[in-house]
Every structure is written in structure tokens, then in C-alpha cells.
Image (cartoon, rainbow, N blue to C red; front, top):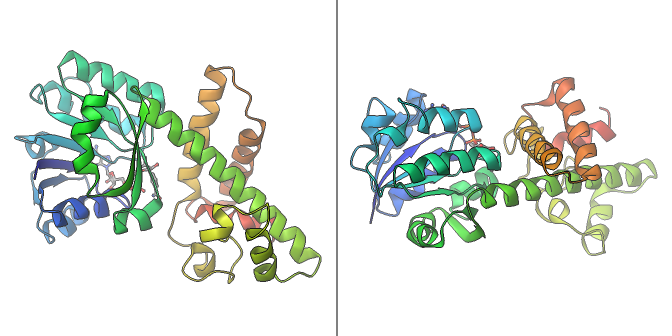
Length: 295
Ligand code: NAD
């Protein structure tokens, strides 16, 4: 069992840290939200007043923060964790951030002989709670092998995508495809319903046909077709439109830098931005269905 510091106890980080505690690791947590910290302490985690104090004595530090600027603020600069962590402390960042931001943190860590992995996740809040997340890691193989037993307590599929930044590249490719699939599925369902089809019947037909995909299988966007998904509770909870927009923005910026054409991804980004602009930013991303079915 390892001594682990977990920073960032939000929708994802809270249940991830909780699974580390349940697995028997010695976990110290830190978050700017006192309520989030208190919830983990009630489950057996320790805490400290600052991120530095929380990371003291840790063999491994894990962060799960909203975006790149938060990750840079926590790790870099004179006040950042890398300035004080001892050489050899394994650092894992599971936030979804730009690949070049992850590479920048990895460089700064390397200068201090601190092994670093970018390890963004897929699987949402449900996967975080169930401990079935997919981890997509970028970094040295040796460090990946050290991290794997720790990540096993929070995830089911642990991938090594390649060198630093590769985890983030794979993650933004996946989420761009997810956005395209969700928008396309919503569009097809709306067309069928306009023609008088029952959305549940159409969903089942497409699921068993060549249009079958993840959205139809486990995350149907049409209200009432599937139990237990955000579409059947007013699109509350789940993976927010604002977070999907963040990821589509990362994919777009990356495509521009790499001269890659992403016509479908760009269209999906515009659809989700339009949707967010209409006041839907804090709904689950399957609410893109509403663009096709004004209520
Ligand atoms: P969240 O906003 O719920 O949680 C972020 C937490 O970080 C908050 O509790 C906040 O107080 C804390 N925080 C911010 N700055 C901090 C600092 N300087 N020090 C300590 N704590 C700080 O976000 P989330 O939904 O848990 O997502 C976290 C990351 O995971 C994001 O990068 C997101 O894109 C990614 N992600 C989210 C999902 C999802 O379904 N929510 C799925 C996959 C990946």
C-alpha cells in the first residue's frame, strides 16, 4: 500500500480518492473546497491546510483539477509543488489539459528528477464511483509500471499511450469522437421522431444496425428512452456541456497547431458552443438533443 496525496476532490476526484482509501492506501487529501475535504476525511482520509503540507511524505501525488491553468498553478513556479517535492516522488495528473501543458509540467518535473505521468480518464462520474475508469497515460514506461497498481484501485482499463502528452492527445481524440457521436445520434433520433417513429424503437433498431454506438448503447440522449441516464432526469449531472466544450477547444487548438483537418470535430464544437450559449452549459452534454428538439 502507498502513501498518496490526492488534490482536487470534485465530481471525479472525490470518488477517485474515496476508492484509494477503500483499497487501503494511506491517503491525504487537499481541495480549496472545505466541504469536499470533509467528505473524504469522514471516509478515512487525512488532510492538511495547504497542498504543500498535504504532499509532505507522499510517495505519490495525484491531481484531478479543472483545467491547465489550475494544474500549472499547483505544480509550477516558486510556490508550486515541484519546487518542494523530493526527487523520486511519483506525480500523476489525471486532469484533462492540453498535451503541451502536460509536457511543460513533465519537463519541469524532469529537471527535479520527479517522475511524471499525464493520466487523463474516461468513464465519467459513474466510472469514478464504480472504480471502473479508463486511464490513458503518457510518460516513461518505467513510471507507468509504478503507477499501475495505484491506478488499478480507481480504474479497470489502464493504457500506456506513449510518451509525455500522449495520454492527453488520446483523450482529446476520444472526446472529439464522443461529441460527434452524441450530436449525430441526437440528429438521427430527431429525424426519426419527425417522421412519427417511437424514439425507443428507433434507438433499438439503430443499436442493432450499422449506426450502433456508445450513445445508443449506454447514454441515450432522448428523454425517457433509457433509465438512469441524464436524459431521463432533465439532463442533470453527468458530463457537463462546459467540460465537453473545454475538451473540444483542446482538440481544435491541437488541430490548428498540427495542421490537421477536423471538419466534423469543428462542427461538433460549434454545435456545443451554440448550445452552451443558450444557457445549457451546466447540463449534461447529451442535452445537445434539445438543439434538435426544441421544447
Ligand atoms: P470539478 O470542477 O468537479 O472538480 C475540480 C476540483 O478541483 C474542485 O473541487 C476544485 O475546488 C478543485 N480545485 C481547483 N483548483 C484547486 C487548487 N488550486 N487546489 C486544490 N483544489 C483545487 O471537476 P471534475 O468534473 O472533477 O473534473 C476534473 C477533471 O477531470 C477536468 O479536467 C475534467 O475535464 C476531467 N474529466 C471530467 C469528467 C466528468 O465526467 N466530470 C470525465 C472525465 C474527465
